[in-house]
Image 1 (cartoon, helix red, strand yellow):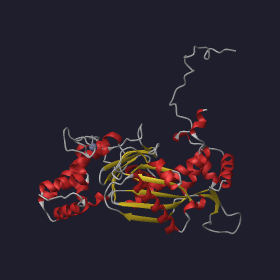
Image 2 (tube, rainbow, N blue to C red; image 1 turned 180 degrees about the horizontal axis):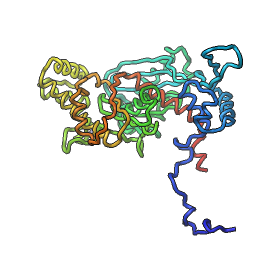
Image 3 (tube, rainbow, N blue to C red; image 1 turned 135 degrees about the vertical axis):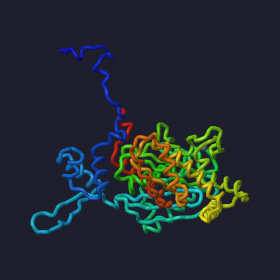
Length: 426
Ligand SMILES: [Zn+2]
């Protein structure tokens, strides 16, 4: 029988559907078994009934799925001691991730230092290593050899064989397309356009995922830090350049083509200062360390020789500012004002619940002094609401390596628990 509502042309109402067309098996539509696993992993320990309650599914489905996950060796049952043990009845049982199911390595390759952490599947750090290096761009072969050596070091430090590693996450500064593993440009590489994930995977003999360093800080905060409980937050990193990572609805936002969130290259001045990217007026060209160094050599008449460490120059500039040198102070003050412009733009665009400032440069407290915050308040839309909290996390490079490890952990989880997305399209 043909009903009135279904009797319509090919394009008629009722046939086209409405509401967002979310791609099958996309991140917002993960299979239930992956959701169960991730719920347990996030909580540390969780009883089955609680998993069912929080996911809004029947206890029976959770029991079936967790049996499967236990069989796969990914989850285990853990007896939870009662607070007051009466000795009667069975002790309660919760689910936890089997820490030894997989081991991953996360590493950050940077201009001054390479760092790596080795984590188990529950996210515990088993070892970390740092190797300092000469600040210069390397050819791909040298960089790959360095990452290979770093894996040897960190596995040796953890006392595990290299064969125990399931996946590697690598972070580099620059423009990185994470899904394809392609690096458009990075200050650690002397070539443009390099398929880092594929080359590293061949060299290391392991699955490799790559991302830019600012995204790794956002991931580290999302997985291990202040971002765990926030749905939406922004991380702004000030290092050799100025980067940003944005988390929306508990997920890292990378943009339509994977290279978004380049806060450092948003323009704050028409025909302004020259940026490393070749354009003018980028925020980075006023705030990053090379910008401060450029100002220092001009304003203070310091001679900055090629090859001289920017680090040493900046330390000296900072000492002068602290000692009251007006030119040195004005350099930091100006950089702080530009940073305020950048942060106010972030607030006006995204209204994040929290902004985390991270990176080496955050030791220079002039950049986020009361003046900077006051300036920022003036530039944020006056709605009468308070500014989002701004936290400074000068955690150093191990944090970034943790973000890379989170990347590796999620790629292992995906590979193990999510069916390939192509399947859904068939
Ligand atoms: Zn730029």
